[in-house]
Image 1 (cartoon, helix red, strand yellow):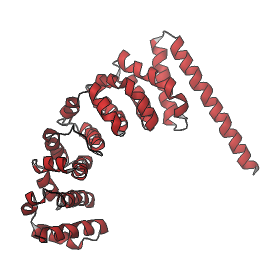
Image 2 (spheres, rainbow, N blue to C red; image 1 turned 135 degrees about the vertical axis):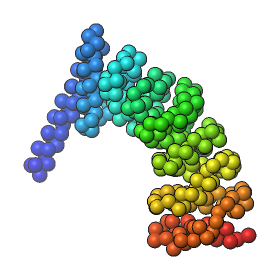
Image 3 (cartoon, helix red, strand yellow; image 1 turned 90 degrees about the vertical axis):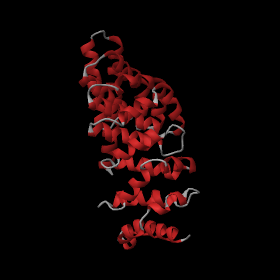
Image 4 (tube, rainbow, N blue to C red; image 1 turned 60 degrees about the vertical axis):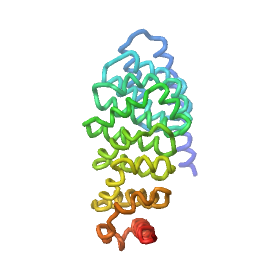
Length: 288
């Protein structure tokens, strides 16, 4: 019991110290005109947040304007990455991500940066903000979706990964922003990035309109191809997409594309989820 009291007292002391440090850094940042000192303070914020002990809800309103100002004031990649790291950590909290909406236009500065690490950090922040469906139109009002679409063409593996994350996020709920162009580009990325495949599977889950888009794209061939990939994850998400489409009014448009003999080996798959999904597909294909 004495040990618990001692630990609690120590935790309270650490919280008080943390509060004093952040408050002091915030005040110092606003008082000083020394740019080097300002950027050192950003590095301190980054170190504090990386320790994962900071109560970010207490300090987000103080931190966010400072961190956003850095995006506008410097092109130094190390300083930008420190600021973006802090923002990405803050954006993980839904309520704080909402606070960032009024600053979201500033991410246009970093989404086109020459350094892929900065682009990826920006995409990570935006994907957190986009997790809230009502934020989607607000983000795309400030940052045209064409900028995101252009990044789907990137040859950089890491940018591909994080732009796939963004499209996975915005396809979790139906919206009218997804086009055939996006679907075609996601199909190309899906061979290397499972989040691109998941984004396409999300579209099948959403509604008949988006299923029609999938049918008029390379997505159906991709789903069928993924059934023969040596990856349970790929098989399951592809099978789920096909299973969902076979429940739609467009089912007759894909029935003839699925060769039962080619996927017959999955009929007794040891993974229960895949087994159930494949058996449902077999049942629907055989039910004329």
